[in-house]
Length: 133
Image 1 (cartoon, helix red, strand yellow):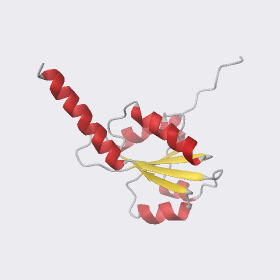
Image 2: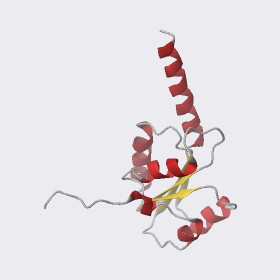
Image 3: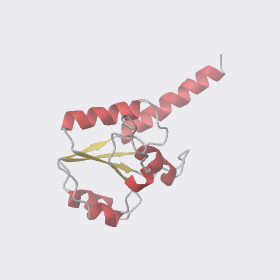
């Protein structure tokens, strides 16, 4: 049927470090690093904007470990993999992440860690304000 897209198992977008190194993705490759603990509407908007601004043919999101996260790393990776503008996801719990990133030779690497922490604080503050009304 026209207009119906086949189902995609987003877990296939989640890579091991070895699979990431074996990639030969269309270029330019852009890597986005973040915690993605509280996935909010700003995340897909930001990722979409990064993809457009960099003209990325491939966008690889690295989900970084985070102490006291609400979701485990694997769960956060699955959520990010479900976003249509993300081509691949790498859980960033490997030993030498910096060397892996540089060996992929991205056109650009974007860090969202500060923005993720700010978004989490804003949400927590919002919830506290709502509870104190």
